[in-house]
Image (tube, rainbow, N blue to C red):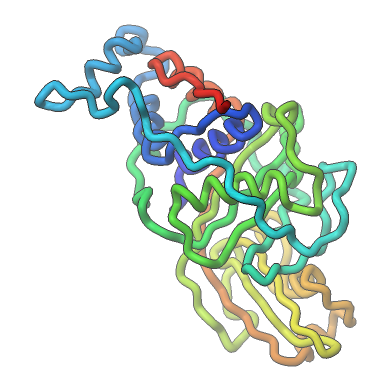
Length: 314
């Protein structure tokens, strides 16, 4: 499953790109995230300064695991990825488009909930230690999606970018790549700017348990995401919704299917959705984890206090 550290790594990748510096690598983000969350927030006696942190990172032989603080740096900004076939960028990024299609490279965007303001506002405190133990290794590969939401001062959320892939990705490279692709190349929106960073929330979904189903209603709201394809007017169409979309929208299964087909490009009567040719439905699972900017910023400030400051690009 996705972790808060995965979201922090996406923030790190996006921030580093916008600030023209090298990001920390995923393994370092995970290690430093765990260390940060292992320190009681209100226990001043247990706080460690950068010198003590350095000593604690020594192994039994006295050698620094991160010699000279040359931590693993994340990959540089990936080469531009083919833009999605979607409407022209909107000058008002707070309103998500209702339609996009999947590119030939299996990159795809997923609609965010227009009612996502139902979810909780930023939590500015540290995450509890139960999130420090990762169930996913940083060297594992998964299909994945990275979602950026803009969060207003009142806590209302609006989609700012969401792109992912159904091809398995090494998490270190895949999360960094799609953090930037969803921020800069979701053609429903203008690219995210540095000025917007403090208002963002990041969501990461790792996809698992893909199953082809013969009954298009054989899935559970809130548990399964859907990937569909079908023939219409001599063309093949396809689209996906992540597992949280139908639940956040308050849709029934049928409403979800009709909306998903509309997203793909189907323009038929809603009562005729079952009559399209060659409808194929794949259900999958994946729990989204989300992290707000301020939580990432508090962690990043702590990281810099330990001596891991930003490394500017030439």
